[in-house]
Image: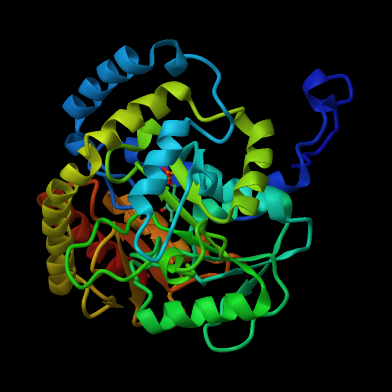
Length: 402
Ligand code: PMP
């Protein structure tokens, strides 16, 4: 970011510029997360789980077991690919009749966002293209910004243009909450196969399903049953952030050994390895099935919150916005009925009323003004969500009448 340099005698004025990419893009994630700190504000802008539901006792017990079982290995540097037993456990868990995974197919990462970033680091030279859904996950746009990619909108039906990879969040997308239907998944795999382009399946929310039928993963659909080690085009990303807690910072990338080796090479210079301590705790949690046992608690609480938010929206916002009730995940995506309504400009009215949301523009690779906004329903109890929607309704009416 270049500032004006009018005082050559002030040392701060003689420091080098930050890199050019720092002044670009929509890199405002921190800003939205920090809204949550304003007193009295109802933050519908975050992407956070319900902190009061973190399974603290399970994590404590797993921590004790981790230290007792793994001792100094839980406190040393570890292999860049991850704890061998954790890789093996993930490989075994995700394997099916059709999909045969070995530890070679698995890289442990520092949250799934690190896997997203490493994919950019391993594949993108400046100007290379990424195919993404519009809108798409803001964290991914942030992660790839230093690589200076181009973006093209992901098509399901037409042949893909030249690109390094396509990125999708097929289950309860962030930000739209949408699920890819089976036919869309099949079309994506066909396009990926015919063009030889990697297909990144980012799936942090798949287990948070409140209704509707489970869809097969792109990873499993792309497996060749006769192959003994998965070698297909899909790179599937998972995480413990939504089923246990994001503070663990443990996620994984699953894909062809060739891709896993490339991501490990990229990871080496980023953090040497994911915290061995957190990996050991995660291994003990997964061995005890603590994450899967916790899912029904989350699903019950989040379904109630989703229903509370959507019912309040039906009462207070249905004349102004359209939305689809999401079958899972953490977000409702609302689009203003009035064409041209700019949700960036609406935000200051909402903050004035004491509620925050994320304007749709930040999820667009080109940052275009958007009539849509994202509301989170997991981080507040039902009554706060209802009050948040009432405040938003007042804000939109004040904005529209100015
Ligand atoms: N991908 C998507 C689509 C997400 O919404 C998130 C969390 N906000 C992440 C990746 C990153 O999650 P984590 O790094 O905590 O695993």
